[in-house]
Length: 186
Image 1 (cartoon, one colour):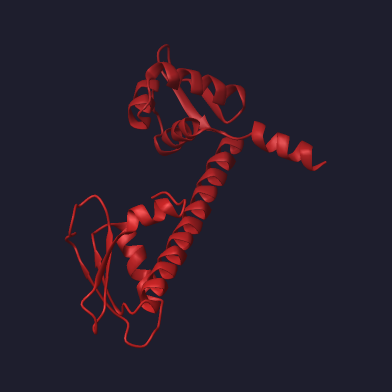
Image 2 (cartoon, rainbow, N blue to C red):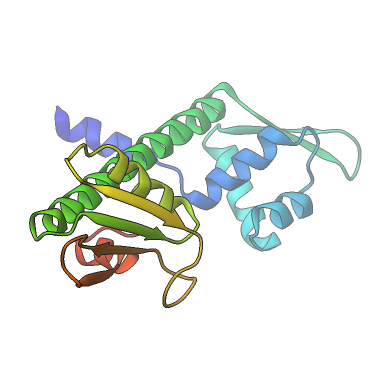
């Protein structure tokens, strides 16, 4: 019985491009296919194919307004798909942020055990924010940190600079690369 449920679930999945079209129809009361294609960032031909598929699967309905105008609206089934996909995306994002935080905590603890007690977060994006949350959530004696918007090497990556208040050593860690080495993509 589980096999049938899993097979049904995979048949009912919608692609990212279909989801973009559904979102455009949801947020725009009278979009035409050119507007949908432009806002979704896909070709007009692909938009037409996606709309036909969504119509055939009952996710949207089309109403002829006049000779040249068609209004697309989400059906309850389409709205349900949009909501479910948005929910799943949110859950996936929260899970990924939690994994990033845990990996950063592991990295900080490793460096702390090696005598590094001062950490500088260099960079200015969401990944730097997660790294800062990871440092803040660790309460260890003598642990200090600060954050700077500039990076020591390049602006495309986030760096964790670990140093010791008692030894003249410093580790410059590319946090973006570290996550990739831990099989996490940012």
